[in-house]
View 1 (cartoon, rainbow, N blue to C red):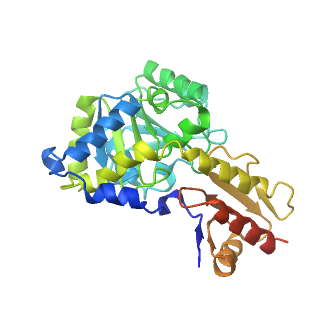
View 2: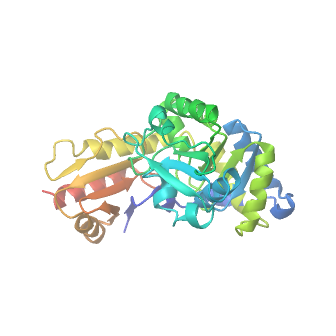
View 3: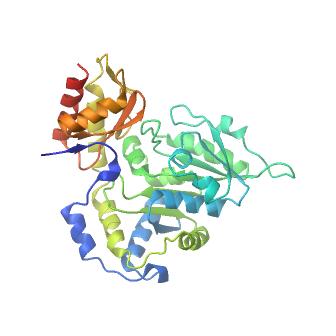
Amino acid sequence: MKIADFRSDTVTRPTPAMRQAMAFADVGDDVYEDDPTVNELQAAAAAITGKESALFTASGTMSNAIALKVHANPGDQVLMDEDAHSMVYEVGLPATIAQVLTLQFRSNQGVPDAKAILEWVHPESLHTPRTSLLVLENTHNRAGGTVIPYEVCRDVYNMARHNGVAVHIDGARIFNAAVASDCTVAQFASCADTITFCLSKGLGCPVGSVLCGPADWIARARRVRKMLGGGLRQAGILAAAGVYALRNNVDRLKDDHCRALRLAEAFGTSTKIQPVSAKPATNMVYFKTTLPAGTVCTRLAEQYNVLCNPTALHTFRMVTHLDIDDECVEMAVSGLKAICQ
């Protein structure tokens, strides 16, 4: 029986065409930097982001860990949104792996304010930690897949540069941001010193992320990747999926956004369940419900073969992706309406 899995866009499975690309990938040893398919993926990522160089990593979390370690010294201060992925979902890596202090700022539904952030920047002194890095997350997961507009990214970057602070964009879903805003990935990336994007979310790959930045910075990042156990060997088998995705799976992200909008619009007049945003920006829909969210998610799974995750006592999330078709959306809508009638 068909299962509609809305838990995350990380649950996608490689298509037959992607599997074929992986099966016939030309490979080498990436630790020696001679895997041709990894090199092809890295060159494509650098070109798309407008950066000098790029590095294939095992995950977005690994990319963010590398970025923090290369940009900041132990004891430095790193600024990030209080609901940032690195703050909430990366098992305390800023403190444990990068050994930095984190100072969290509040955003307006995921969109930061450059002037407000400026108040938290510390110049290096005898008494205070140096603010060395500012992290932006675009799209912003916990804000519902919100896109940080290019103009805001630019203002934050200009403020940071003026104060000697580097900027890293956790762009796990930056292609969703680009498709939703008619702004190129390179334009967003121009508002940061470094940027990472995930291959294993909306782009539909089974594994991987790419970290992009200046060539000398990426050379240092490669050493940190090795330190973290991320020195891969015949990684071209995985990188081939990324090359395929960049060629074939970017434009179709708009389909995910349309299906997310249909999910939200189906409950615009409901009293027991409401989308947090009537018009979700990308491929995420957060719902508030009068029933316990855990109960709603359990009943959806057991009775209607629809999977999703609670995010709070009365909030749950649904994420659309390339394995979610129109039938899946109808399954979710029908199930939710039956549960919440």
